[in-house]
Image (cartoon, rainbow, N blue to C red; front, side, top):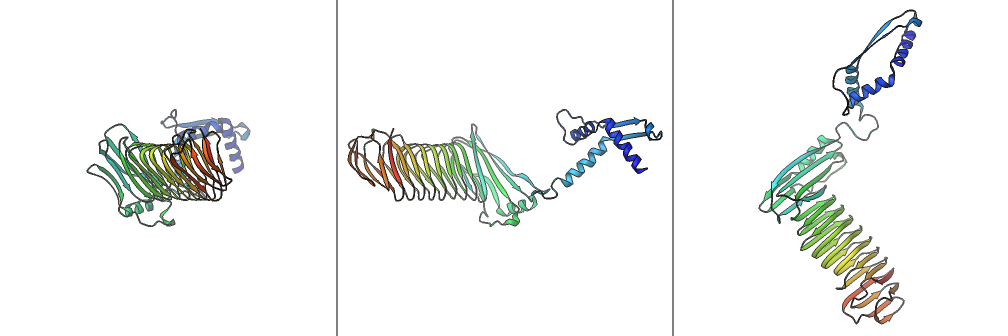
Length: 371
């Protein structure tokens, strides 16, 4: 009898079209814009003459199937070998809005947090702190221990962690914290984080950014002073424009599309420095890395590396005193040069002399090209 019933059920599923039924149930579990919310039942009458005139009525309750399938999904989605568990999630733990004015300052001093700065028009600032983790109960406990606070004091909007030096370990459950700040474009910044990336959209104001073991990315920054510092983190920017610009990192690259400044410094170690367009007096150094710079004016420059090459493109009309030394050196014939060129040294004047132009490498080549 059991075999006969199984055969009957198979025939029924074939008759009604198993795929259609499956699609119906699937749409109910994961509804789309066209899915209905009404209860559905399918009643099928089958005359099974080939099974000893055994007639059956099959009443399929779709709602019951959906409930059981959904319950199964709720309990089994994160079972097995999946690296997530059922408590994996993210929460907006702080969401505050403040009235602000152009020219005020955002101050952030936290640890183990990424920072994203977005800008736009208006007279409000919104601060959101988003907490994520594979174990949200544990993540909330750790976040509570860090004692975050967001408030406004005078003309300064502050986001601080009073217990930012708390050490983290594997038992904390892969916690991540992201601070998202939306502020007016005309705003000053002082941002400090450890073990976190910092990303800035567009700012007109004085900017100080410092992080450790994190990258810094900036679209456009314009102000009087700009300082971007990291350790073991790359620094990338589209446009930096200020009277004084200081860029520093270690064991990581520096890459900037355009620099407009009176005085520009950039330093790293065991990594490269690349400036697509540089205006202003500059000092650039690295170790065990290359330096590549395209200069648009000639207000003085100093480049230094070890175990790396230096490749500089400068205006053919620059007036400079050259002091260049490396394993091999090359000066483009596009310059009007008066001096001495040797295999490892160049000393002399370009276009009658003027600003200081110095380049040094101990284990690499130096090339100065004209534009």
